[in-house]
Image (cartoon, rainbow, N blue to C red):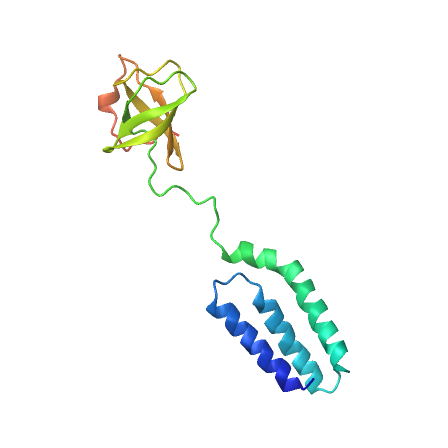
Length: 159
């Protein structure tokens, strides 16, 4: 196969990679096609079947070896901190929530799914404090009657 066909194929595959979602698949095939084109251009490519064999083996091997590292480096990490930390906020139980069970609480004008971490049950209408948020679910604990909850600012975090 002519060297310039490999080079054109390589640039087409790199363009497909850049114009797509960027899954780091075509970059290995495009880069390998350019390398095979350079080897063929130097007269070291051999017959077409050998060029295709080299293209297949090099591109697949490089994709298997290097793609996970590229994805890990260029994709956002899933362990990013929460944008809005709700720890320390005051919520009101929308229903009775037993110890270590899930229920509904009202906070910021909406209903949230919450798990009661204790030390006691939550009665409907009782105030509780958000211990932490996990996605869109909250972990709460009841405020005791004698607590100084009104003196604590809603944005103070208790981690």
